[in-house]
Structures are given as structure tokens and as C-alpha cells.
Amino acid sequence: MEINSIFNPASFPDVQPLPSSRLLDDSMYQSVMLLVSSDEDDKGNYNYDRVSNLGMIYLYVHRKGTKRKEQTKKDCFRELLLFLNYVHSLGKLDLRDLSRFEVEQYQMQLEQAYPKTTTLAKKVGILNSFFDWLYREEYTTKNSIKRIPLRFTLTVLVAIIH
Image 1 (cartoon, helix red, strand yellow):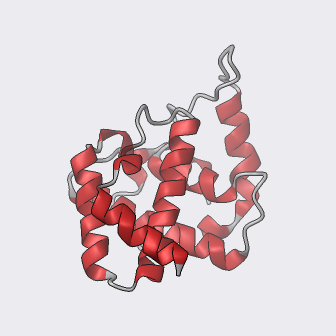
Image 2 (tube, helix red, strand yellow; image 1 turned 90 degrees about the vertical axis):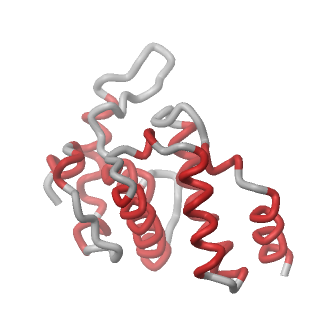
Image 3 (cartoon, one colour; image 1 turned 180 degrees about the horizontal axis):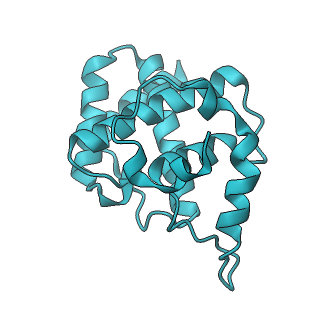
């Protein structure tokens, strides 16, 4: 994977829904983190301004401190790339431009496409974890996915309980 593809949002106009072996390769992680950490603020926050959405997905999946199996990484990439395709279908190039309503629309599409609650819970769990991480890293100023409608929350809770 070339490091420029992680930093240039225009380099991925047609994101494929299945993860390529290049995304699964974590050999670029340290190089990307060195660039991001080189502009750290006085509070210890990294500056992700030069990182594309695809780059943020890459950093999220390969972040240190997590012990993810290869299949889990593939699942994360697949779900997040599908979501990125949705973002692009709206004519947006940046996750930070999404409204709460647009995120809720995607969640409604998932509800309709995946009536099996365990599948739905897995997909929503990946998105929720990703958005939570983006917010904690201050890549986004809001965590749109945390404001999911009650009917959706109940569906996911039922899946977790069973």
C-alpha cells in the first residue's frame, strides 16, 4: 500500500466493498503514525487533518492495543468500506460531513437488509466502535452513531441478550 493513498482522499473514489490484501497488511501503520504524531498538540492529540477516511479506517483496524484476528480485520474493513461507499453515494468525500439523519438512514437500510438480529448487531457494533474511536481521537466533533433511534437500539439489545 502506498502511503499517499492513505493521505489523499481523491485517490479512492470507488472504494471496493471487500478488503484487499494491501489493506490487511499492517506494515504501513508505523509510518502513518509517525506522520500523524509529528504534529501532536500540547494535550497529546494527534493531527489527523492530512489523513483520508480510508486512512482512518486503516489506522482503526490496525491500531495498537487491540488483538484482532485476521477474520475480524476483514469483517471490519468490509463493513467500513461498505459504509464509505454509502458516504460517497451521497456525494460526500468526508465522514465528517455526514449529518445525523444520513447516519440514521444508513442504519435503517441495514435494518431492512438484515432482519437477523445477530448479523445486524455485528454490523452496527463495528460502525459504533469506529465512530466512537473517531470521536475519541477528535477526528470528528460529534459521534453521530451514538444518537441512534430507540427502535434501532432495542433491536440491537435484543440481539445482544440472546
